[in-house]
Length: 352
Image 1 (spheres, helix red, strand yellow):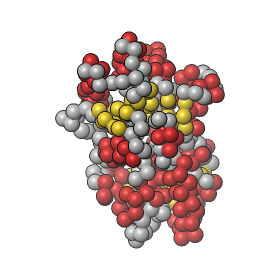
Image 2 (tube, rainbow, N blue to C red):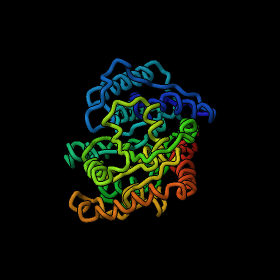
Image 3 (cartoon, rainbow, N blue to C red):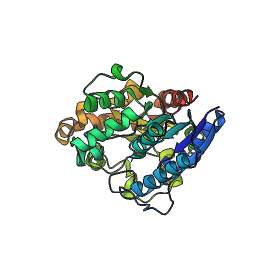
Image 4 (cartoon, rainbow, N blue to C red):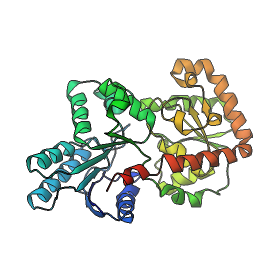
């Protein structure tokens, strides 16, 4: 059994961070560990910054409170050598504060952290808005080297991180990098009630409305195929139940993403027998089998899309009209995703 301090993410009700509030501590507790959760205040701005999955100001209020709590744990003598600290988001300034206290007070701890995104991804909001500024690149390198176990959900993410940030192949960091599924074991049961809903000719765009998601392609396809129902989920204010119900009633989940290091929404679709339609790039290449991937060049840009628009239309029509024949393949793909990308086995095995 290990003593674990869990530095969690602020909960956004429409995202997985709400489930992580209870699931991740429970997962660690089930493995036999003594878990202390370090949370921030609840009275932070709830609305996410447009195009992002958190509030840029609120997240710093949350993290600053967590840093203060870690400092008090050290000064009160409640941190011992060999304790584990797990950051559910590696982009956390508190990692540097923790390393500072651990080394100067000679209390060696083990630091774990999950990487979701960063400036090293040119399509992420950090990459778009800040780019390769020295301060952000050096900050990310500092986080990485302060962390004992850096977790990534896909090999695509690992390769991009190593090449864009370190200019080095991933084998150089084999002791610091761990490929693991995310702690989302609960999702299979969560979507159980929505699996047998009556399907309709519905095609969903379940992603954030952000430049790298290319929602304009989806909207144009909707104009070309008015015989089907098309919904951009973020065009509506949906509860989680309403969103899950739409997934359960849809036949197709569409992506033209230019940035995806995991891709939770397409997995959610698979869990309720919605056919994923994804480009042959990014994390999708290792997560989805051939029948669900269309050639990457078809949606690499608006101009490329216009050139290949009819080919996309043909696949969409075929997929909707032959939906029943694809269910078996969707379920097989969902089982693989559950085992390899949405189960945090490798992370749990490193907490000893």
